[in-house]
Image 1 (cartoon, rainbow, N blue to C red):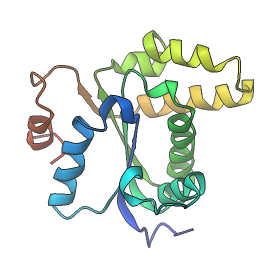
Image 2 (image 1 turned 135 degrees about the vertical axis):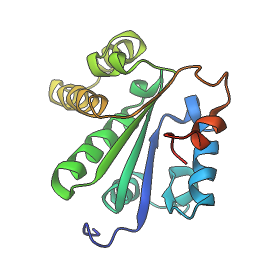
Image 3 (image 1 turned 120 degrees about the horizontal axis):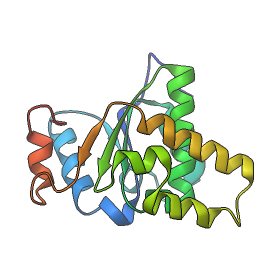
Length: 170
C-alpha cells in the first residue's frame, strides 16, 4: 500500500458505468488527462487477469483524490457502494480528498437515500447483511454531505461545458 506521500494516482474515479461511462465520464477523464492529471479509471488501468477487487481497492488507497460520480443507478451496484466505503475509509485514515459529482441525481436523494438511490438500496436488503447496508448508507450520507458539483441538465446535455466551466473541474 502506498502512503499519503507517494500516491500512484492523482485521481480515482468512482462511478456506475452504465450511467456515465460513455458520456460524462469519458469527457471528464479526457479533460483531466489532457492537463497532465494521472487518473485511475477501472476499465483502463486494470491488467487483464488481475484480481479486480484487490486492484481497485489498492488503486483507491494509492490516489490523492477520489471523484465520486453519483448517478441514478449508482446504488444498484454493490461494487460502487463497496468502493465508496473504502474511499471514505481512506479519507479518514489517510487524509485523502473526496469530491462528489451528482450527475442527473439530486444530492438530497443520495444524502437521504430516497428516490432511485433508496429503491436500489431496498433491493439489496434481501441479499446483504444489515451491517453492510449500514456501512453503505453511512458512506452515501457522509460523501453526499461534502461540497461537490451538481449536474442536472445545467448545460443542455453538454457535459464538456461543465468540465471547462469556471468553477467546474477543468
